Amino acid sequence: MQYKAWFQCINPECKDHYPLDMIIYRCKSCGSLLEVQHDMKALARRDAKAWKKLFEKRYKTTEWPYGSGIWGKKEWVLPQISNDNIVSLYEGGTNLFWAERFGKIIGLDNLWIKLCGNSHSGSFKDLGMTVLVSQVKQMISQGAPIQAVACASTGDTSAALAVYCAAAGIPSIVLLPKGKISIAQLVQPIANGSLVLSLDTDFDGCMRVVQEITKDETIYLANSMNSLRIEGQKTVGIEIVQQFDWEVPDVIIIPGGNLGNVSALGSGMLMMKDLGLIDRLPRIVVAQAERANPLYRSYLKNFETFEPIQAQKTLASAIQIGNPVSIDKAIRTLKQFNGIVLDATEQELADAAALGDTTGMFNCPHTGVALAALIKLINAGKVDRSERVVVISTAHGLKFSDFKVSYHEEKLGFPSRFANKPIEVPASVDAVKEALQHALKNRQAANK
Ligand SMILES: *Cc1c(COP(=O)(O)O)cnc(C)c1O
Ligand SMILES: [Zn+2]
Image (cartoon, rainbow, N blue to C red; front, top):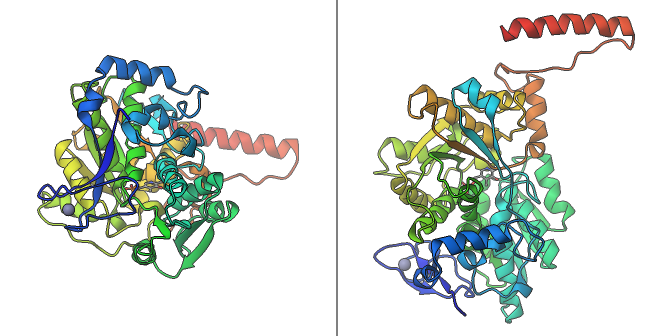
């Protein structure tokens, strides 16, 4: 095998190694999280130009499995997996579009949205889950005693786990906080045949339980403390740069909860820089909900201290997390990428999502958090008009139609600045004409 990867402890004083086919989530010597480390010398034997050409040649082709955004970069992700064990639903390769009108409204000429929600299960979680479930399939084929794969979830991890396990024929178990996820997210693992356990607690409570039940090696842990997921998610940054013909954007904004995704974004960028595909790094901005903002609080103290908090209920339910498992990795990433952390109130995130929708987006509330953070950055003069900015949109808006309905019905407990209610009229031509005249006049006045 030409290329190699292994688990390595993230603690710089420890750096213990473990093979990728070992059932392990934390370092045995010091208890820190692990990360996947690649044999960079072997990867560097192919030059940057050749890597770019290879990635471009495979991008979105039907040559299985390389047309997947993840497996097109297989050598950088999980080089030792046999293609027979790959469980792929052609994840990745999502659209990156110029948000021209929204950008102009908020004061940017070069704003782009990376729409990770346009994916098989409707969120970026697919990028990591294809890697984890593929590795599980490989371990089972080698005789590992794994009977099922389990996760705690705020909704999207469980949807992704359920769908990839269903595709592979591997049983899955999901632990969900009762009443804290959207109906769409609840029905996804139900439809895909997962064992769905609804617990009367929050995400952090589910996370504690799943860590206990996966101490038994027959149940494999699929949360992002398992760094196999990070390996898949790291391709999002590589894909963005590839989509810009290998130009690095100035700023990337990402909503953060458990903080695996921001760590993954950084890791993909660093790998490109190490291997000479790019010569500079973007600035990374993490956006949190004000009601679940432990990273923001730590940022205000220059990351000198970190304290978990009790997360409060937020519309951005996928990031309602008070004790993020990847905190150390995220802080390391933010220090390397001249990082900024911002937070957004419920009203700010809801209005930002809705304003975006009026310009042709269809935002989930987490994307609303990122857009609200962007507006604050511009108002604070931290981003200039001409800079190329990318917002990572993490889930599909249709998963959160209950949020959108409540917003437009003005039932969120604060004013909805961009509410757009259906007009009820009798079914007669005259009544419709009259209603339209009135409504169009109002619109024109509002646009002045
Ligand atoms: C999981 C998730 C996030 C947060 O990602 P982390 O890696 O936990 O920081 C943000 N948005 C959506 C829609 C998610 O599903
Ligand atoms: Zn260690």
